[in-house]
Image (cartoon, rainbow, N blue to C red; front, side):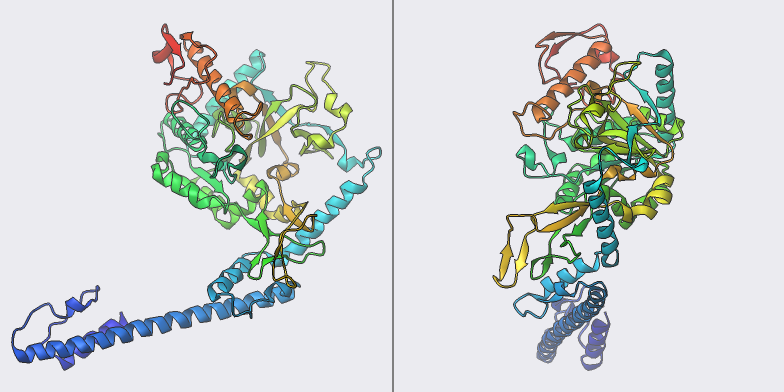
Length: 556
């Protein structure tokens, strides 16, 4: 703007007969709005054209120089800051190739920015804590486990939707209304874990964009978004009542946000934020270069949700919106109930700071982590860490497995718990994963893929915060009503799109029968569908079903 003003001033003083546009859009034609016909004016115009062209070149040159100086200044400042931090933390070796003229400055700049985002000053404590945990687990004597590490049955409150007890049914009916009231008052947010890719499904893209083969062609993303929209519509606040957050990964963030944009966010209030990454390290804490200008990095596990919510201001934004409760769940369940009012309401009624929706194991050898207590604190114990005796232990009262509350990554939190308890303890929740890390070899001048583990990736799990809870509760739900996992490729016997579609279809048939329909045709069809915008959980189907014959397959 300053250059444009000076140019206009120049022409006004040297060529008063030429009318100069003061439009913000400065172009050649705007200098000559009128077309004077005299030879003198034409010469003046010709002269002005030459002067304009010269000045235009000078303007472009000046802008280029200015941009170059700005970029240089930014680069120099960033280099100085990163160099200082790397030197202070013993990571100067990763800057060894910055003097290489063959590496473009833009690549060096990106490299420095990526380093600048790493919490270099905290990596040492992250690693030492994780290594100490690894060593403790290696040396622990199973026959002489310290009291603080002893695994016992979960001691918190629990309820089950599978119970036939009248008092439990009344409790959960009341909880459902509490949940709806909280949703209507804007106190509940839904958060989807959507960082996974569809690689195991044979699909090249975000897992949430996968179509499991329903008649409507709905993707996992669409199923979840429309259920959330329908749930909001069941309240007086309307279908936009529930704030919706989607945690992506750096790998699929653009594809995911683009997909939602194409569908106008399904009419929801959606916030997207990417999961974080952490650099790979050697045993002594040295960062590993994958190329001369890039670090070997990996996602920080689904427990990365907590630092990511802080980094991207998700928690503060929720607080500003009046949110008090958050329901978190994974994308790979075709029957998941986002912001489930029964689960949310039950947790609120129990005054829980953290809640876990679980499926009770039907067999001791089912390979799923279970909710238990370790040192009197709630935790998830992996099936591989349990003895045969523990896995097979059954209750004398109802015969169910004592260690049976299977974890399905479906959790409730209060915002206060996340802000006041979890966030201050983020540095204490990392675990060691020893991996084959591709690294840059100076001698071979190329990236080498090792055949044996040569490095460490730090990861955390979403359930690592459970021991911090002071009032955790569990809701056990029916497997056939709420769990249709999509993990394995089509044709697999378990957890595949085919098994998920069959489970989804069975729920649709069940709802129609309960609403009064008589089902005819192919009763074994896996192509029966009740769309999420038709019903969230089986409600409101009487007009379509009561007293009617419905042929299978169907889609309503």
